[in-house]
Amino acid sequence: MNNPTVYPLAMRVVHWLMAALILSLLFVGLSMVTSLGLWQYQLLTWHKAAGLVAAVAVVLRLAIRLRLNTPRLPENMPKLQQFAAKLTHLAFYLLLLLMPVTGYLMQNAAGRPINAFGIMLPQLIPTDLAWYGLFRELHAWFSVLLILLIILHITAASYHGLIKRDGVLRSMIRK
Amino acid sequence: MRYWALVAVPTVLTAAFFYAASDNRHEVSAQDFVNLQQGNAIQPGFRRAHAKGFCVSGDFISSGTLAEYSSAQVFQAGQYPFIGRFSVAGNNPTAPDLKAPVRSLALTLLPETAEQWRTAMNTPPVLAVGTPEKFYQQLLALQNNTIAEFFAAHPETAAFRNWRASYQPTLSYATEQYHSINAFYLINAAGKQQAVRWAAVPTVGAANQLPDPEAVDALQQELFARLSDGPVIFDLVFSLATSADDENDATIIWPDTNPQLIAGQLQIKQATEQSNGQCNAINFDPLVLPRGILPSADPILRARGAAYAESHRRRAREVLLNTATGAHHE
Image 1 (cartoon, rainbow over the protein chains, first blue to last red):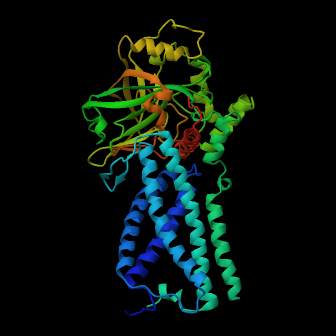
Image 2: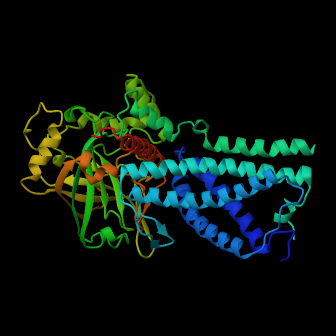
Image 3: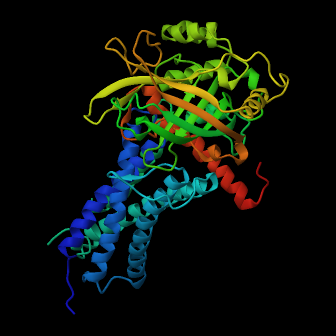
């Protein structure tokens, strides 16, 4: 089995496109729940549509990840760091799935229609205050966890790229 | 240098997220608004505004008159179900009906469909001020008993003050007019847009007595009694803007001479207490619109979405915690 030093092109493209999408979703999401501005309505509409795109993207990305070989972490990297890296990646996939799921279900519980580019998506749970409370709060808490994870991930990547210079950051950037 | 960069990256990122999440960066945030509305005596599980009310349901008999103006299903001739809610202004779910300055009728037409349309209508036809920031100041002035000074300092409140001076509350929810207040656009199949406001207009004359004028829920009792004799009916009347009207300014009444079209009849058939009614779980956000209706850029209309959502979030969380801890829920 060959051991690539960089991530396959498909994964690098998906990674950076999703990074832009997820960061936009988070910043828009945080803004739209406080803002009374004229753009709030457009932000909300965009957030829902982009959230659906992100949901599809994360499933595709998981499928690609499971099919393709990814570079191993450096041999000399401490085992604990290797474990932390794997755990972070797993948590990313989990949260990137849970964010759209809770977003979808909170819309269901609020009885609001979800139009995916003209197609009405099914309401899976009843219009109900307690269900709304649950998924609305989970959506918020998962977003906080996701933000913490992103900060950790970017800090770790910067550490590898700036300090260790061990090719870990390069594996997601360069050919 | 590289170490500085390593510190700078997460610091800048964290600061950016904190800034985005902070509601203090707005002059008035959705949270500020709901904090002001709920006051100090929080009523768990209830709406922060218009806490007192009850659920109704019925059918909208669409005449098809507006079909040429909007592609929304609700304006094509036919019969469409709705869930609604009558309420009075204020944050107290046990306040006396007759003491409230404002009454409301909120509707979700075609619930749980892609063609769903929500509207929250109030008895005043106009707002006193035109922006959420000024509206916040108005609510503050009401609480601080400085409303006279506020009105004097804001000449745009004239139309609202005139309405308030001439308004005589009736003895029934069924005999009030409920206004969309803000303007919206109807969009037809050809993409042509027409600015409109609408109102639910009663079809019966004013009642002259209440079953129990002393009761806290005098108006609710009256409507329940009225429904036992048959449906309560409103005409849904649309006023079309002309080139003289500014659809983004809800402080000005449009002239009666504007074209008035009756979209159909709202037939209210059943009523239930809100604690076990379908309306209780619904946030009557007037920005939930089907294709064929778009919001105007009225700043107050656009602000309603986030403010209503914050109220919905708070009471849903309270109901969830109540359910989870097994506490008694009314």
